[in-house]
Length: 330
Ligand SMILES: Cc1cc2nc3c(=O)[nH]c(=O)nc-3n(C[C@H](O)[C@H](O)[C@H](O)COP(=O)(O)OP(=O)(O)OC[C@H]3O[C@@H](n4cnc5c(N)ncnc54)[C@H](O)[C@@H]3O)c2cc1C
Image (cartoon, rainbow, N blue to C red; front, side):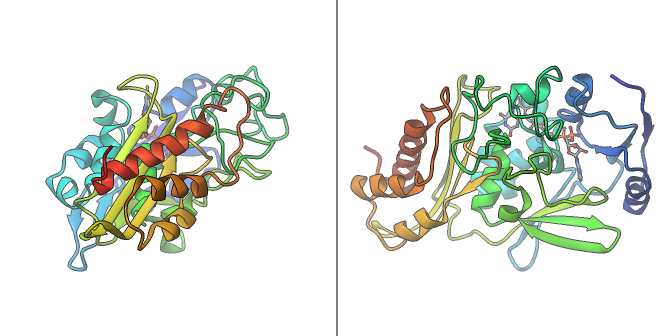
């Protein structure tokens, strides 16, 4: 690990001034991803700006029904919050499905959104990787790509985004609240992360001198009781998703009144299934409807060899999650 300066500002303005002045600076929150990347030599910031003194840890509900979660709220405290468990059980489940209790006690909401891919070639500085070093190539394309993308990839990068929480927040139409030198702005979750295209090293639409201050989730009261985060992984705990599905559904008797769907472990960003949602709205919940929905969801999917199994696993997981969430199990 290289030597670096460390500062701990106590105001947001000081944190923003510092990151604006220094192009080689990085924020640190829980450090559970950044420190690993620094140890591997993947990230080499000359200055680390610890943001833990900033007052960004509240979890509260606004009069409009919007739930606002501060960027420094811990993954564990959000998952265990009574408000989140009652109003956003999908988010709570997705957080509980991630990492381990110890990691969730350190990891923050802002850091979780910005965690970087787990592609082994990204972490191995002896191997070509366009995300780590643009123009060097993608080792995963013809390499060991079992964990990799089946949607939206290019020959520049087939890595996936690893965050479980971001999949749930994408399905829930959440917003990322951002502060920067020009003030505050909000970005819909679905527009926050980017597909790799020809620039896989640019992973989000956050500017270098901006900070995430919060996440806002609009009122989800009609969806709260029928939602599910289903995660398929190699171990029951402490493993990233091979495929995951976030589903929140509002039923009218046995028909689907409204539905929100997103997949994880399949693309460079949480993968929203808008066309599948449109197909399902107004339909009777049944096995054959779910099979048709899965066919729509898989349009354009492509395997790269070792990850071809995801072409079956993804639709099977979607069908299973739809059955469970709508109560049509079996
Ligand atoms: C062994 C292991 C297993 C894991 N398993 C899972 C899993 O199954 N599912 C899952 O979803 N995650 C998993 N994780 C990832 C874990 O959830 C993330 O490491 C964690 O959420 C990152 O949060 P942090 O606060 O520690 O971020 P940090 O490491 O502090 O920061 C990560 C990045 O975010 C930036 N950053 C942090 N906060 C802000 C902010 N407010 N504004 C702007 N930039 C910011 C930092 O500059 C850095 O680039 C796992 C991690 C480990 C080590």
